Every structure is written in structure tokens, then in C-alpha cells.
Length: 67
Picture 1 (cartoon, rainbow, N blue to C red):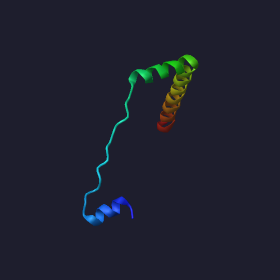
Picture 2: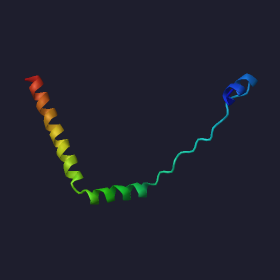
Picture 3: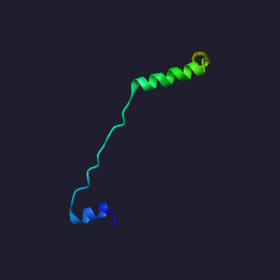
């Protein structure tokens, strides 16, 4: 029999668990992003290229739909 069932049978409330949020180090994340961008400098161009293509496809689809 598990602890939860045993506590329920005894009429005890569920055991409270400690909830600890993981630490978020903003500087470490910034450094990791910078290192990735320095390692692969093409990423921003690919990202903006894909965004522009999606924008044009969306505009073209709206124009075609209402034509």
C-alpha cells in the first residue's frame, strides 16, 4: 500500500511537497544566444527571410480570397 492510500485511510491530509522554481539566469541565456549567433551568423537572415515569405504568402492569400 502506498503512502497516499495509507494517509487517506488514516484520515490525514495529503503530504505537502516543497515546490522550488528553478533559477533563471538571464545573463547566462544572453551569453548562450550570443554564442549561437556568432557560431551561425546566417540564422537572422534565414529568420527574416522566412518571416517575409510568410507575410507575402498571407497577403497574397487574402488578396486572392477577396478577388
